[in-house]
Amino acid sequence: MITIDDLLAQNKLWVEEKKAQDTEYFNKLSRAQEPHTLWIGCSDSRVSVNIITGTAPGEIFVHRNVANLIVSTDFNLLTVVEYAVDVLKVGQIVVCGHEQCGGIEAVLSQPDDFDLIFVRKWLKPIQDTYRIHKQEIDALDDMGQRATRLAELNTLEQAHNLAQNYIVQRAWKKGSSLRIHGLMYCLREGTLRRVIELSD
Image (cartoon, rainbow, N blue to C red; front, top):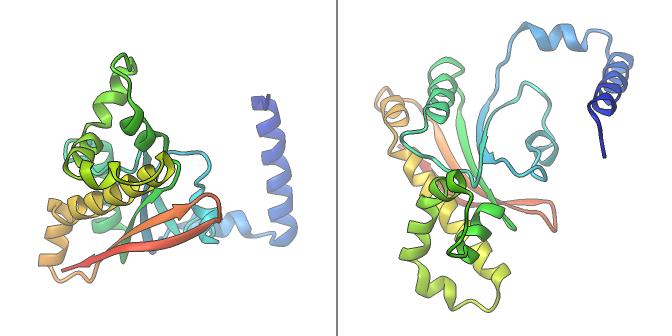
């Protein structure tokens, strides 16, 4: 098992490597952040934003939660969106779902005795999406295909939820060229693909 001491040691090696490449790396990074993108993605540990997009620290402002949900009562999410749009002036927001998402799979295979109370409540919007598209999803051959399709539909739904959000609507009314991109990430291949793009 990786311990906190292991993580601290790895951090020390990383710092030394960065300083060897550029002695001013951390001084430059500490001056300010100017991200071009807000990324709203899943908390899944296999979907590391800077790694899969080939970007450096400071380029992407990130919010993550289970199954990349845009919930109108989530003050954490709303704070991140407001700061990104109104202060950092990001030009685009990505809502990224992924294949083999545990939240999606939990909705599809949830037993009656599912006792993770907060997880069950959090996943309610995905249960609603599944209910609406149940006939299409259930007609697919296997659980993997069903989970991928529900993840796509969830990403579409969340992108539309974000487009209807007051913060985004206000920015568009002020003439912002902000764009919303719904993406899907394939764990097996490491690739991203677009499922929707929204703008004013």
